[in-house]
Length: 219
Image 1 (cartoon, one colour):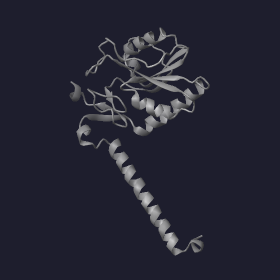
Image 2: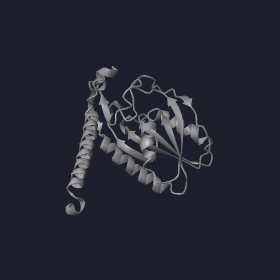
Image 3: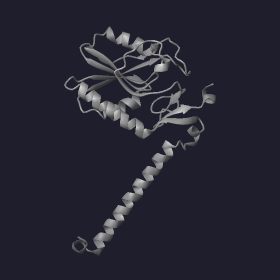
Image 4: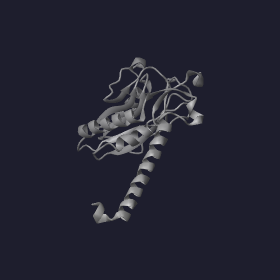
């Protein structure tokens, strides 16, 4: 092959390959920097990384495969609970192999605190009628379950064909209300977590992993 191409062409190909390898190395370096939380304004607030970017991506695609199989031919509506669920939803939908719609609701019971107040406010309602639709609620995290229980009660009145729940994170030790969770990414301990869409006072959503916030940051 070398004789057929000529020495000049071989040198060009080697140069291109070296350039590609260098580019990959730079991307990998940047990912390691993000994974290791080297961003100065965030690094000092993180106690530990609970779930890495690679762990999350693998599990999200596993969930996408299950959901695709379970909802084949049903054109489900994925209802994302804002704001925390938007990153999870974006990755989850790209792992689906079936037709589906998305819609959004914004509800709040936390404010800028770390404990649910139990008083639920609907900040944004759905844009469409869900009667007769197969609805899958996509949550970032289920804690006490009070907020989600309120939301499910509200949605059942609208008479969907089915109503199920998918959450990235689940804290069963914190549960105060029994809930049937159909798809769970990870069960986690009772720690205050941020990243991958989850925030504290509006910050840290951009982290690609799920990390534990230092107590002194929120106490």
